[in-house]
Length: 205
Ligand SMILES: *[C@@H]1O[C@H](CO)[C@@H](O)[C@H](O)[C@H]1NC(C)=O
Ligand SMILES: *[C@@H]1O[C@H](CO)[C@@H](O)[C@H](O)[C@H]1NC(C)=O
Ligand SMILES: *[C@@H]1O[C@H](CO)[C@@H](O)[C@H](O)[C@H]1NC(C)=O
Image: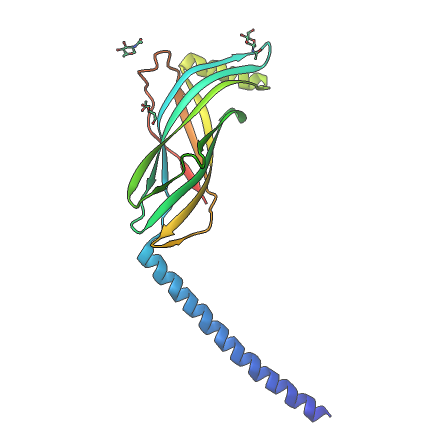
């Protein structure tokens, strides 16, 4: 009885040993395939910049806690890849001042989604205009007055992307990178003349 049990266990062991070897071989093979794919395709993220900013209204009224705003941003998105093209299916932009969101804009929808070929750049733009109740505290209001004196506002823009990569005829699943831009936007009464400096944004996958 004891002998039989022992025999059964050793057979089980050699089966496990074999499976283990197959598994290790598979992992190594997959690793090599992934490495070759990476070396040949060299997949890279897109690069994103705010190229122009036009702020013609940014008035906060403390009596009703309302911000009246009007801001136009121009962006450039660059695909640095040598082998991949990018489908921009959806992009939504949110604008914040002092952590408070004041505006949002659909930059890319199904109406203007597009394919960006390798090694090219594409313009995009966002228009934030209207008014919103923004409960700013005293510190935030004094920061706003400070920005007003300087003549430039520290604005934070967050963009939610929905993209796909294309290699030859195969298209990836949807990816949802987020882009964060910290920009300093000069206030411009005269909209034809701005002093905005192109700002690179952070892209997170
Ligand atoms: C808030 O108050 C300001 C100044 O009193 C006024 O100009 C503005 O229209 C008000 N905003 C709203 C949304 O009522
Ligand atoms: C921003 O983009 C819009 C639309 O592409 C364009 O008409 C406008 O001239 C651009 N503004 C600046 C300041 O480049
Ligand atoms: C805007 O500013 C530019 C440069 O300072 C000036 O040439 C132009 O006449 C101004 N336009 C208006 C409408 O004030």
